[in-house]
Length: 453
Image (tube, helix red, strand yellow):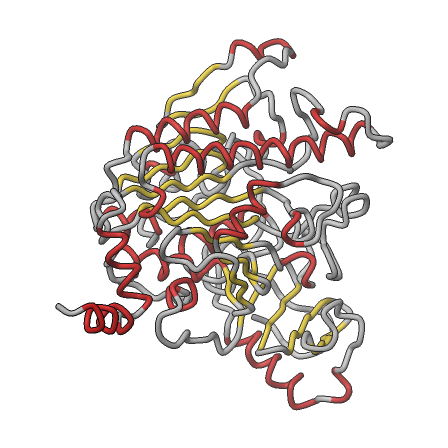
């Protein structure tokens, strides 16, 4: 071939074709089915990371993840509280349809279990030959129940089964595949075995043991949920802050450090080009110093437990070298229920039962047109919220408020009186999106749209 013809042929190759050819020689394994690592922080707000505006807490590895991948600006947790948010994530159903709709303590160690026949992400991916692990905080069923992670599609589980036990970073025991793991170093009030470090070591071990793939690693860390405990304060020891503030910052930076170790392991094992890594948080920032000192809600109103943006909008970072373009930002409105169809599409399996999610693969890979939700919906206790395009409606006992997120991201200006047609539409969505739940149903008694559900 003449040089001119050769150069012309090279120039005609699309960028996508070049990426595919480079991946074929990148040393990655099972390129048709990527490994998936989904990391979930606990009570981390939109404003707690450097790449989302944080200036006091160092998060260099998560910032690097964003620089090397995609940062989402309009991503939402499944709920504003732990258990329902995790239920949405795992089952692909929003809180008007999913089984767990609120935190609900039981008289045993553990939480209300999701039903045995629930469609879950790990069950779907096992159909495609994935090894599956949950390492961290579960919260969707007590040990041995139908909601136990080993009965919901996870081959391997290590961590806290009960979210109430996860309030301590020095527990006397954790669980591994139905067996209680006694932590002798924490007996009788001692603090020698830091649970976060144990979770990280288990996660790294799982990745090393399954590097031939494909695998799903769900890594729901407990940082930075209270209690605020950390082995050392690191770079924050001499800050002119309170002990609690120093601990919070050190915890978040410690988690960031260990995510960096995980990314380095993927590179060491030569599987980073075939591994999608995502990072999010289970709800918006909790109150106290997380919200105040470190401005955890970013520019938003509200906090954990509320259905304003500060309680629901969370970081989402996605990194997949060679597949997700580096340094990209997406304002596509997405939510936890989207993870099920997204992971299923990447794994090549069909979501067999109804889901409220929409795959965001077109956004991640910049391929084709991204379908959009008609609306996103949440309910918590007697409160409900719906996002329709840039319009956000929030219903509390005070009535229904309407905000234009396009011009009022802080939800300060209630426009309900000016747009009665949108108030009516939002009220109809709130009623139609809700289905009866035997454990979490309620009677709405406040003013505004809505009657007995």
